[in-house]
Image 1 (cartoon, rainbow, N blue to C red):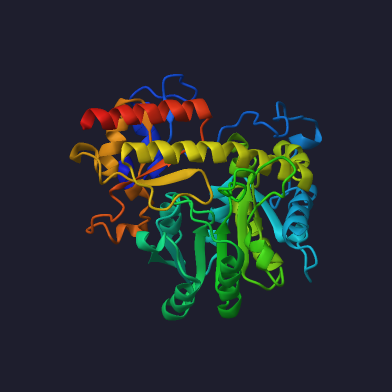
Image 2 (cartoon, helix red, strand yellow):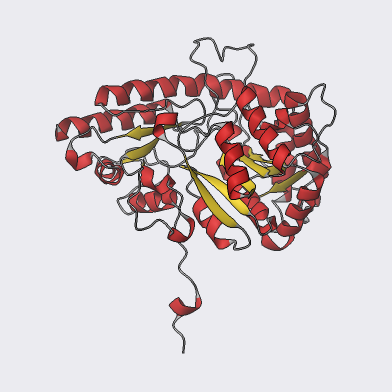
Length: 424
């Protein structure tokens, strides 16, 4: 009889899941008052000054007991399309409709649907980038993932001219990235983002943009997020000329930008032809998100509500960003590229004492202080382990999140400061 291990392949944990598993083995649990979770990519979920009241219940009735359409409820698809049109497409020749939107049960599901729908193309991806991309890029064998290395000396930025050269030279048929970036916080915006979209349009290269942090945009001006000020959000949708012809596919959802990670509700926005194929993939991959959740989410997506949430996020998270940058500098931990977006500092610990001067060593030492962080090498996305013989160039980095509440963040930073001081 075949052993079970020979029937099922080994499925690796993403870097963040590995980190959380290690922490759980030392007694961590969500809500534990003694731990500071600066590792997992989740924002604080409670009421922020100026934010909308938080959802406290999800109504159920006979209609919501039924399956919803795999592509999602029409009303919610319309609400998503309307938000993009109002924020990014006023006065433009084409506008998104419900047919340009598909709903799914979380960002990973949306990305899996897209990956399933891709043909035999070269797919470019950035290094560093989101850890969960690694298995996603490996398990779907129709396309070939090609890494594009971002250099610290360039601010972890890919110049549009280099993107254009890579599309031509490597024959890229698609490009995947997070914007703002997880883990570096680098933001592609304005004319630079327009050039990225222009490259996609000019060469027929699908630009797949994970915009889950697009509400987390920072301006060092003290009144940037003041009540009543214009809210800043960023999307590739603002630079699309024709919503059904430009090869731009956007993924977003409630997880980060509305601070509801537990609801697992996401959407894909793009040309109708792509949305049809993504929805078809959903018919056998996942079946679509829960009906009742979709009906509840409609009220969150009108522009005044969405902008109010974005403004509250920017005000609260700007304060936490400043706190983390100041405390890390005092510890002698460098942040080569202060985050312009998202809620992470991609920090270099190489100048710390030798025992904690690598990301993995720092992570393990921090766990003993009941603080969680993520070693930077996990963001050196390597599908198929094609570079496993090469030491990661990100091994001196850690990702530290300022997603938790201010008090939890402060507690964690104070413990890390004590850790560093003892090793000195």
